[in-house]
Image (cartoon, rainbow, N blue to C red; front, side, top):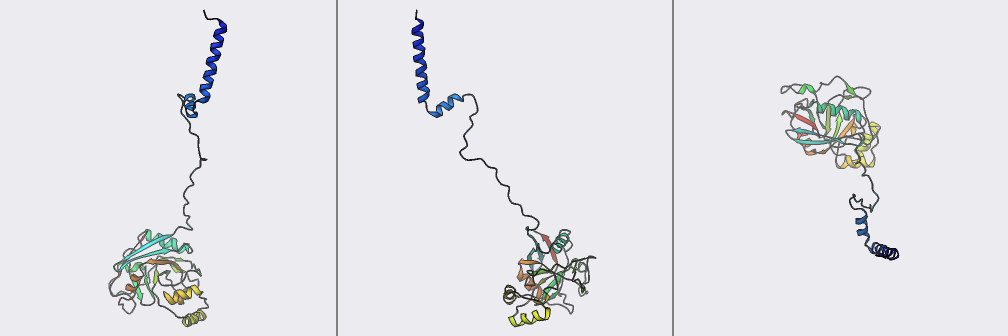
Length: 253
């Protein structure tokens, strides 16, 4: 029979050996041993973080573009946020398909092309048009940074002291180039001021500077200036209506 003293000695020897074995065991093996039967949680090497949401464009910074499709080609226009009443009114009419099948009913080479009269939808050849509307006007929205350079989208209007715009008729500037002497004369006549940047634009690209501060500019052509050239140079009658109908279709992009 093994004595109790010998049993205690054997137990101590076994325990000491086991402790030495555990001490020398690789860390991964120890973790595997101590977590057997349980989900192992990995140690994060980098602090966790939540992805930031993508920055959404606000109504004040988002840009709206429209496309005018004609038999002469397509015109893409950016609408200005600085003229929100004109922008929103135009978008409303476009989305309701108000402009579809209407004519560019007034074209003047070196000046502008005009459209948006609802009476032109069913106008017969030679009929005088240009007086139609939607029964309301839009208050003028003038901004010194928005001017009548070539390709500007502007609101037509009748003569009124407030210079309020037609609710639907618009024009695209064709224009011509000017020199400094001509711009000086226009400044004096219209009590206007052309910054160096405006002068350079009117001298290089062209436009209709005589209309600045008199008609609201609310957009700018981005592609399709050559289409304006084609329409502006079309033969027209005594009322500046093209002899060949140029109809439009407008959509929001």
